[in-house]
Length: 311
Image (tube, rainbow, N blue to C red; front, side, top):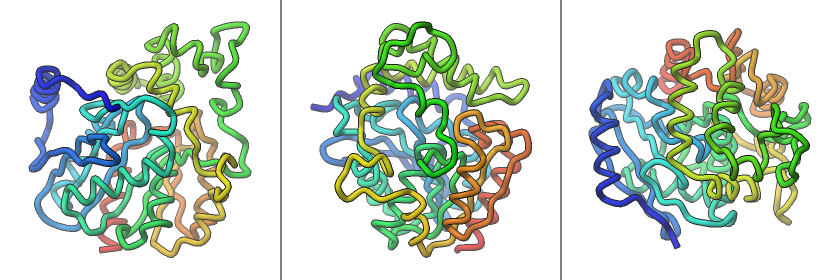
């Protein structure tokens, strides 16, 4: 069973969000994927399409708020709230957050928006989904841009994957907060720590505050379900394939962007992924995990030039 927002809450959120936007969407609606409603928006009426994929259910589509106004002057920009946050439904259980389901969600949003093919821009876990869409539905993908790609390679594992998620640590310090137990006890406290690691750049209080607020729009059980769901390269599916192997068989144009000071996914992962894709790697000097929020001018220009080159 899916759990959606009440009409009153959804309307209140819409008024609040739209009131502070540099540019409101031209179209909005709901896609339906396996019975789950997914809220999407389209901003910009002309040009090729760019789909800014949701990274993880701990945030929603407003994580792209510094990209949409610029890119929508040149392209049709699609954003969507992930299942589990924003104005999308919050189904219960890990099976509803497996990679295969999220790939289907991506295609469902493109269908609902009337988009035949798009440049897919994947941030963090969204990069993992973008890779799989390009593999399974190459007809829908003009090109890939992958930022802070949270994919399992032979590079050192991110700290959040090293910490045993199901165990109860001896303390609540540092990455010991990345556990189901702690999320149930203090989700806002985890979000404050986590986004502090996401944004190591100086003067990041505003993006941290924004992200913590977005995290409170979901709940601990939903996020726990996302962590228990099978994902690319974890070896839990008989047909699973390594991320670098999958990337190596793609033929679409790609660009990898990675911050040099990413505390979540090491730069070595970005280097390996770019090599597998035979793509250019753009390193944002001093950038953390979410470079689109802290280095928006550089990222926006990279996205614009790449989309123009494949259009």
